Image (cartoon, rainbow, N blue to C red):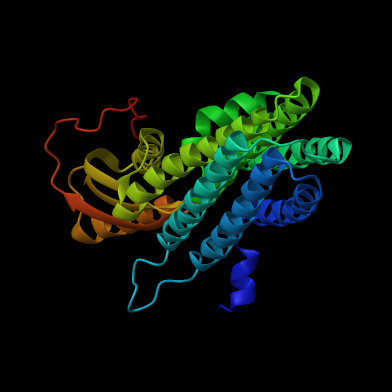
Length: 324
């Protein structure tokens, strides 16, 4: 598969967010240079960090779609976690620079110029970041396979963000902070101008830097455990268990392990079948169950084993229908 075709498979949320934040970073950077506002500088740095991160993650998510090779038989799913961790390093550096800038403003406060330019650009930033955030929320709901529309998308996205792909989670968290950071910058720009307390600009700048640190810690932790290899959420395990038990010849699941790698899952399960089957029949059933599991688009590979039925129900799920 060519790299251009891989790019087409890249995470859409991160691609749109990278483009939007690049435009915002340029506009904000011009305003920060003209006005000298610390809060505007902070939100510019935030947009630069977001654009860099989301660009990294977009390319990482595309590379993660590369087919397995002999050297890498389990595929490249965890590559996206590695790219996100690189993005976290960028966020951390930007956070330090932002806090440092804010402290300088507090020590040496001065009036910024071009108030209305700053206000207009920050309002535009809130609208653009808000639009990107809504797109990310819709993507979270889609990837989590939740039925939600209208205003319900907001609550559904917060409840189900852990089921979304790592790049989508990154965009979701970052644009919450970006939208709130732009609003925070707008408030402190106006406060410092209206009160004449110009050090407030520095306080707003530091608060935005602290928000960046918070998001870096959150995303860094999630992707570190993703690189190590983490068990799939219970809802995913139950979904796969239902697929297996829906087969009329499967009576129980003795054991199952589902490992999350990037946005994909690797399944290893040992199942019990109805009695008095020939080896050939049992083999056919095993491959049928495996094929049914692999029909789930989130399952990357599945290994199914068969063991003797012990007459004891191990898998605790809703009782499956008996074979007619």
